[in-house]
Every structure is written in structure tokens, then in C-alpha cells.
Image 1 (cartoon, rainbow, N blue to C red):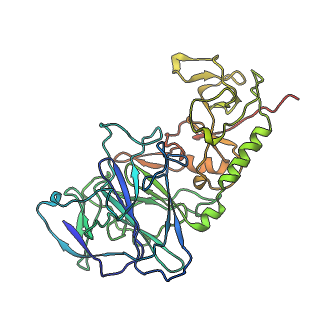
Image 2: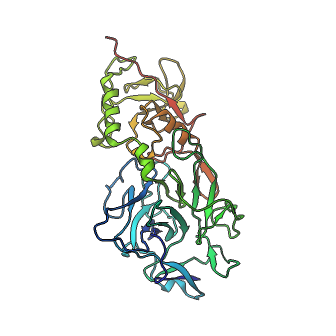
Image 3: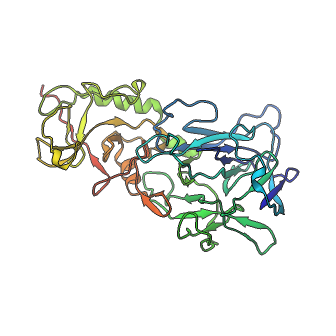
Length: 410
């Protein structure tokens, strides 16, 4: 089945996500030409969870961990128009990240952080997973839709994808593994709380979740909810999760300069290992996440006591990372601390006081507690809270811990 778009029919700016092999990609388009001399207008930013500010191989071209959506000079929006049934859909060349309309390529993110690699890493992201349409006039409302138009202005849905005819005669459907959206309650701020996950259709209608991601039967239509993205809306493509930030929301987020100032302030306090009495310091982000150096702070994630690295207290009968804290005797994972560097994932510019368990990424208390109570889709029907900086599933009663530093003895 093909939903064919008429390129003469204008719509607001469009963004499509596509999957070639084990990657997905995104197209941005619009419906009205910009006037000469107009200032660039930024609609918002998409941030891929799990990369902490940069892909492991570096942000290059259309493959990056963060993408700003801005109004393009010339409109190129399309709308669903004519429906065709075809018997051999695979003969059409679709789903290629080299096509010119693709603006954003995403890769499946593994739960431990980073991209899923290797020939056995089978992607679950649909070829054209979704598109985002942004009004070119204030208030620049952004709307999300499942599936995307290819270079021929066609939408292709797989044989196993749910599809149906709407009461007004149009065709609607869902991608094979679905496009899920969650809008936070209270916006993306210090008072935020997780919302309810919903599924978005090709026409932008909102449905309750299917029994499993690829089930043939769609959920129930939710008539009092819309596909309009809000600051902090999460978009799950069954393999990668993206965060939508509005320009106004990003103004409330900390800047990279603020994060660096917090790192320097924490180091200036000269925290010490309470046993070895060595001075601890968070490494510069320029080092990247390499092997921890000798001043790297480490934490017992069950109690939050911060130490320098040492080799005592091992409880190998409970696992290679299990250690006994010499201060409180609690046994649990003992991991290095790493500052979260993707500022757009932070709810507030608060000090780095909490760490996610068990990965050790550090951020403010409100940021840590929000993500620790936010379930992210995983697999066909499971949900897990995860560290937004590396994608590791959170463990323990709260998913995060307050850090307990010891100051200098002098």
C-alpha cells in the first residue's frame, strides 16, 4: 500500500526519520518560502538519548546526537493525497539515508549506551519512522506523524503494518513497530512529571498503545489528545528515543559554560577520598569517556559515598563490581563518576549532586529524579527507566543516589 503525497499541496515544515540497514533518518520540509532578508527561525531541537552530547564516532553531517530544526529558505511540504495498492512494494527504492530529503540519521541505541554495532545488531526502527511538521508562522507549532514521504512523495507501509480507511475516506496506519510519544506533565521544568505513552498514526491521530509494538490491532483513539509536541516531549522509534526541546525551554536549560563552571567549582572544593585522603577531581569533558584517571571520583551507588579508586572491599561472590563501602559497610556497585554533558537533558541548572545507578553519570537532583521515574519503551512491550546520558537501565530503589563528598581536612 502506498500513500501518495501531492507536492502541490502545501503543509508546514516536515521532518522524516528513515531507516537504512540499522539506521534511521529525518527529513525537514516546509510550505511557504521565506522572504528575502528574514532572520533564521529556530523551531526547536531533537536530542537523541544515550550519547551525552556527541556520538562515539563524532557528530558528522546528518548523523549526530543533536539536531536543530530551523526554517529552511524554500518550502517543500507535502500531504497524503491519493492511495494506491501495489503488489510488489519492494521494487521501489525507498529508505536510503543518501536521499536528499533526509536531514537526520539515527542509529539504534543499546541499553548500555552508544550505538548497536555488528552484523547481528538487527534494527527495529522503521525505514521512514516519523516526520515532524512545524508551522512557519508564530507560534511555530510542531506536530509529529508516523511514517514519512520518500523522494517520490510517497509513503510506504510494510505488509505487517496496521492500516485502515478513515471515516472521511483517507487511509491511515501505523509503522510496523510504532512511533510512541510521551508529553511530560507540567512541561519540562523543575515541576515536571512523566506523562502517558501514546502511539501516533500516519495522519497524526493519537491512540493508546497496542498490546505489543508490532501487533496488527491498533489501540483506542484518544480524541482529547493531540500530536502537538511540547517542550520535553519524548519520541520513541523502537530502537532510539529522542527528546524535543523548544527554544523557550532551552533558555531555561543550563549552558555548556554553566556545566563547565560547575565542574570547576566542584573541583575547587577539593573533595577528598575519606580513606586514601587523595584529592579528587572531575576530568575535563575534552578527555572524553576514556579510562578513569587517578583523581577520578568513584562512588558506592547504594550509599552515595564518594572515594578515590581502590582495590579493597571486593565481594566477588556477588559480582565483579560489588564492593563494600568502608564507611557504612553497604555492599553494591562501585563505579567512576562522569558529569552529564548534554545540557538539553537537564531540567534545571542545579549543582551536580546526584548520580544515576549503576552508570555513575552526575547531574542535578531534579534532573536525576525526573529521569529515574520516567519509563522508556524497550522491546515489544517492556518499559525501563534509563540514564539519559548513556542509556543504561537504572537499578536500585530510586535509580539514583545523592553524592556524599568529604571536604579537605585543612
